[in-house]
Length: 323
Image (cartoon, rainbow, N blue to C red; front, top):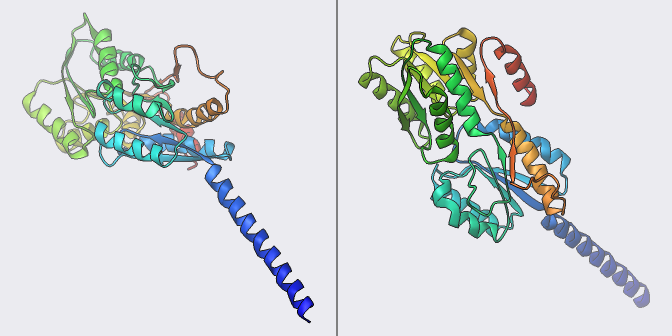
């Protein structure tokens, strides 16, 4: 009996050891999965499209854990703290829309010494980031400038609204507009920033209208700026009387384009930033750098949406978002 009991105990010990070994292997497998993180510049529905692209990439990258993160506020300091926490937690790669590229170089370089850094949407070209994937914001601005010229053949004063005046995407879009309207009778007399504060964005429009009763055109440079413009114009009875040019594909913006109260909107392809960006980072970590050009810049072209193509664009967007 003693021998039989010892044999049973031995078998149980072996089973327990195997179970522990399997659990340990499972933990090791989970821990060995590399995390790639998409970090945005601030809260906005615009980023849901990029998030859908990241979700699609996750289905094709089973060895990686893909995450999508928002900083607690739209500031370089908050964004830096978030990325440092992600690196401390073992993130293998981060793709970020830099809030303040000029003043984030040192912080991004510090992170680049510890993990793979890509930029998107708003580049930080002077940093040690490996690549930028996104729009040519200068070209987007030029497209908006063309819409302004078309909308105001006799000329007129325009005011722009944007989230982060210091971000590359803002500066370059404004630059593209100014280059395009230079020498015409269309003027960009002011651009007002709001630090990605929706309430402030709306107040900026209200204040601009009050101070400039002769304004002919309003330009929303960030995705949420045009909806705030639309709301204020509707509330003040000026919708359709002042020309509106937008950026990106907020539902309010697309609705305004469809009804004719918004001249047009210049859209990007944030879905592709999320999808292609995650796949490029994974390939780079695995030693395949063929997808990264020598200058490190990967341009995903934008598109002008007006009344002629808004329905087709909206249908395609819903399909991408799985709606």
